[in-house]
Amino acid sequence: MDVAVLGASGNAGSEITRELARRGHKVRAIARKPDAIPTLPGVQAIAGDAHDPAALAPLIAGSDAVISALHFDVTADTLLAALRQAKVGRLLVTGGAASLEVAPGQRLIDSPDFPAEWREIAMGGIAFLDALRSVEDIDWTFFSPAALIEPGERTGRFRLGTDTLVTDDAGVSRISFADYAIAMVDELEAHRHPRARFTAAY
Image 1 (cartoon, helix red, strand yellow):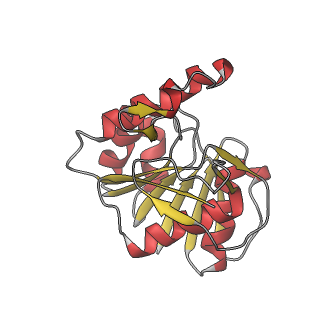
Image 2: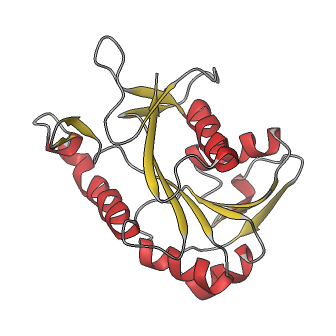
């Protein structure tokens, strides 16, 4: 596939770019600092700013899908405007974990020990997902990670879920960026969660 990755120089974006290249996809790796994008076969590093739909649209036009690994200062409306202008019909989003349920009707962000310093960023992710849920003209997928997503080994061994936080026997929810990237590219290829959210953790 021809895939545009937004935020391709960041932790998640760079791992997703590596995983796409590993599987032989053609990658348009877009970031404000393209020098930080991994140099890999099939990867074209492109300078771009996702805050401007009119400027982003020609960079993604002709791609089969866009994978966003952007921070949530870029809103769903802004990103969707670029896809509509470019006539790209599929969007996969590196989402947040805060809206996942830890008990029926209780989101992770509602937990008393949810870090206060993460709340503003987390609310951006929740707003992004809420905006996507009313979208019918773009085939979107929102991929919430585990509660902890961090550098680590590429194992290919993790469990999938939908709207509930996935934890291990000790109650810990975590995944490496490398395994998160595997799950993201698996979703790109298998298309199991159209217009839906899913999650993955060990």
